[in-house]
Amino acid sequence: MKSITIGIDGIGPVFFERSMKAKRINIYVRPFKGVRVAVPRQVSFRKAEKIVYLKADWIQKCLAKIKKMEQEHETVSENLTDIDRTEVKEKIVGRLNELAERNGFAYNKVFIKNQKTRWGSCSARNNINLNMKLIGLPDHLIEYVILHELVHTRVKNHSTEFWSELNRFVGDAKKLNSQLREYKVELL
Image 1 (cartoon, rainbow, N blue to C red):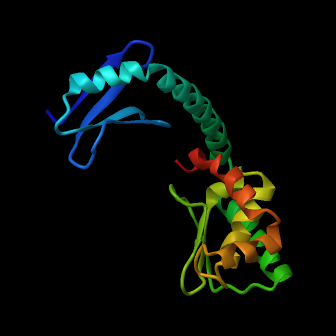
Image 2 (cartoon, rainbow, N blue to C red):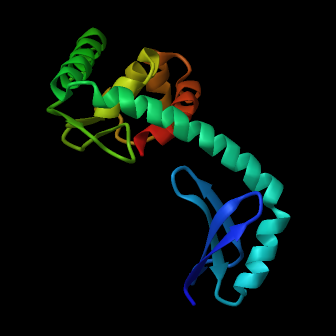
């Protein structure tokens, strides 16, 4: 058997999946996906189920956090459906141009996309991709993402040099990066 879903008291459905890569039982609690358990081939599903019962308190805490994140995501998603894509593009590109000009950056092209894994990226040719979901973030984080990508037009990696350069424009870049991670669920 490759996978099985078992209803666990106090948790709900838990998806157990046989994994050829896992060396131990791994429990994942993810937004919109629920509880998943990677079970190594030498371990029985019954034993994995017992481990889930032992970790029930931790899983319940994670599920409570996830539920809150999912509700916040639904609110932001509802707000995004009301916004015109052209309006979003104008606002984000306008802010990009303003920050580039003010800080002496040059980029090639800009693309506004609906991505699921990134807020933005910068290619080797200095083309900047920005996620249209940026519009749902606080203004200071929109500015952070844009400046992050603009700095990549000068420094193509995440070296110490990159973070030092970014700090010149945003102050504490690592702190802003940490704040941005709190909005990761919005990408889904």
